[in-house]
Length: 102
Image 1 (tube, one colour):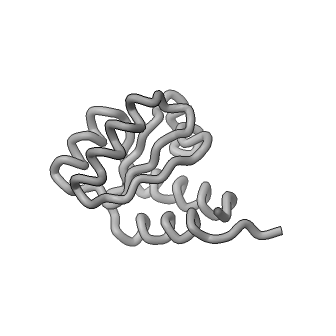
Image 2 (cartoon, helix red, strand yellow):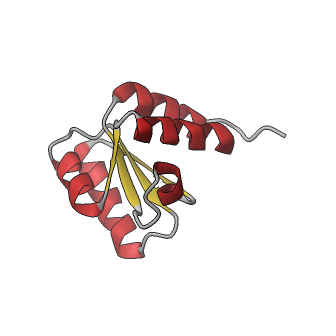
């Protein structure tokens, strides 16, 4: 994971209003298949992680887990975010899957 790029892209998506956060909002976006990518905070409860992983698997949406999500989107108390733009989802996914550079 290229952490610097990943965090920058998540911040860009949030500022562009292509990243929505909060449990109720994200659940709605997954169920309506408007979410292109779900991002969970590593500090989210086990029940929340299991709930969203199961929902995403059923909907065919990728779900990733990172540290300090709330800080990156400007909402420190939020533990889940949904990226609604496919281009932002793709660059975030690529940064997440990229190997760490030394």
